[in-house]
Each structure stands twice: as structure tokens, then as C-alpha cells.
Amino acid sequence: MSELKTAEQHNAPLTGESQSHGRPVDFHDYLRRCLYIFIAILCATSLMIWISYLPEHYTWAAKVGMILAVASANAFVVAGFLMHLISEKKMIYTVLAFTVFFVIGLFALTLYAMHDFPTGTTH
Amino acid sequence: MEIPYAIHPRPDTGLYNAKLGIWLFLASEVMLFGGLFSGYVLLRVGADQWPHGWLNVTLGTANTVILALSAITTLLAWVACKVGQFGKFKFFHACTLLLALTFLGIKSYEYHDKWIHYEIKLTDGTFADGHMRENDPSKDYVKIEGRIVNDETALYDLRNQGKIKMAEMEIPRAQIKSMENYGPWHNTYLALYFTLTGLHALHILGGSIVIGYLWGPGRRMWKTDHERFTNRIEVSGLFWHFVDLVWIFLFPVLYLT
Image (cartoon, rainbow over all chains, first blue to last red; front, side):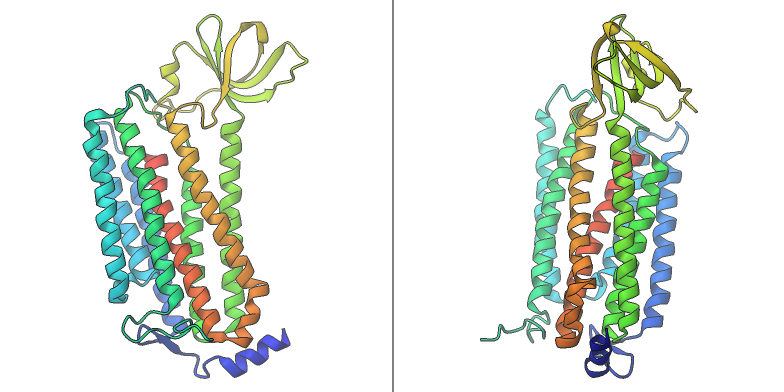
């Protein structure tokens, strides 16, 4: 453990701040930001649960649509802020653009297969 | 020979090797889970009936909160690395590990609950459904805590049935036509549930091993190569956030719709 303390003294930045994506990293700033993100995730999860218990006159398709919209917003918060995708390098966006293209293709093939979906998947 | 850009980013891309590598890996993971999700859509749309209310939403919500919290702690562990605060790094990484193990514990409980849940077709055409309490092959009866329904379809949608009254009952083996637990073979829904959540749980387990290593023996690198260690924490964190992202979609798809 004493070795590690020495390491901290020798290798770690002395100011308590470092760089991330060209900006200084401040622990307390991140802590505050993380709190907001956590609250946002809690709100989104609560909203999804509330939508799932909406009365019968909301159609199943409407409920699924609303729940997936909230889930997507939730995913945006996680990917955008926790994974720093909101301010990532161009190369990462290029990789993800290809991924999105192929995933859309994958789901499009599924939709296309609706003409010929397997029968007998009763439940 | 030193491998270039193993620690410092390549000037033109702004990325070090491991970061580009993890994003390429995550892209392949998106395709893996994308394929399973599209399979789910295909099978669900083709189904005449689909079970509702079979999973415990409270436990699913708890796991959502746990995983969200672990995503936060893994980010804070990386920030602690960035600012060189070893104590905070150790604390937040330990929190991530504990939360991951809690997630797996809850998931195991849910799996066990399904494993001991049986649907028993009786010779008179009715169905006994409930949790197995005694299934000793030497005895001529099985004991379950559940209920009897006349029609199997009554077991599909449990959302609007209120608090279902369960009773302990002994069923003579002579009255049992067939008996099956709620494993992945029971129906399409459970096959998808176990496949999707099982693969996700394996990712959690894999991530936990990496996090555990970086928290334990791997942290020696803090001393020898701090910058590289911070990169490792960032890369493992990206994988962890991806695992959280997958759960963000798994939870509503399996528990709420």
C-alpha cells in the first residue's frame, strides 16, 4: 500500500485536475453531474413503469412506443454523458455510423421477414 | 520494440489503441444484441398470445437502479484516476464491484424462482401452477404452493388478476399428465428471457472479473504506469456503460411490455 502512496505522489497530477477531451477534469464537478444523470435515469425508469400501468384504453402499441421512446432517451443520457459520446472523436462516430447502418439493416431484414414469420410461436 | 499509441493518442484520430479497440468491440456487441432483439421482435409479432406479468417488476427496477448506480461509480473511479486520488478510485471501484455482484445475486434469485415454478397438466384437463415445495421421486405425490386453473390461457396474463391466492396442495402423481418448470424450454417468451438476460448476465460477470482484477492485482500499474492504468479504467468503464445500456432496453422489453 505504501508503494501505491508513493506512486500517487510521483505519477498523479499535483493539482487534483487532469485533462479529458481537452478539458480539465474536476472531481466535484463530475460528482454533481453524475447526481443529475442518476436522477434522470431514475425519472426515466419511473416513467416507463408508470406508462406500463396506464389503463386499458391506451393500446398496447401506444404503450410500447412510449416506453421505447423513454428508454431511448435514457440510453441517450447514458451513452452521451457517461460514455462521453456527446463529445467524442470523429473516428468513434464513424465506427458508430457503420454500426447504426448495419443494425438498421438487421431490423429491416426482420421487418421484411414479417411476410414469412414462423408460425406456432404461441406464447 | 514499443507499440505506438498504446498510451498516448494517435495525433490524427485522437485515440489510443485500446480505446479504438473497445469501440470496435462494442460495435460488434451492438450487432450481437441487435440480432437477438430483432429475433425477439420477429417471434413476438408472430405469437398469438404473449405472457404478461410473469416477471417481478420490483426486482427488475431494483436491478435497473443498481446498474445505473454502478455506471456512475465506474465513471467516478475513472475521474479519481484522472485526478490522481487513489483512495477515491479504490472506493468507487469497490462500489462498482459490489453493485455488480448484487445485480447478479438478484438475477440468480429470479432465475431460481422460475426454476422451481412448475406448470402441471392434470389428467382431468385442469392445470396446477405454482412453486414446487416437494418433489421426492420415492413419494407418490408432489407438493406445490400455487393454484388450479381450468384453462392454460388464464396463466398468460397475470397483470389484472390482482393478488393471486396461493395454497399449498398435494397432487398425486397418478393425476399428473405432464409437468414442466418455467425454464427456457417452457415457451418462446422464457426462451427469449433466459437467452437475453443470460447473455447480459455473462457480460456482467465478465465485466466484474475485469473490474475485480483492476481493483485488486491490476492496480499495481497505478505506480508503474499511471496513464496506462487510467486508460484501462476508461476502457473497462466503457464496456460497463454498454452493459448498462443493454439493460436499459432489456428491462422494459421483458418486464414492462
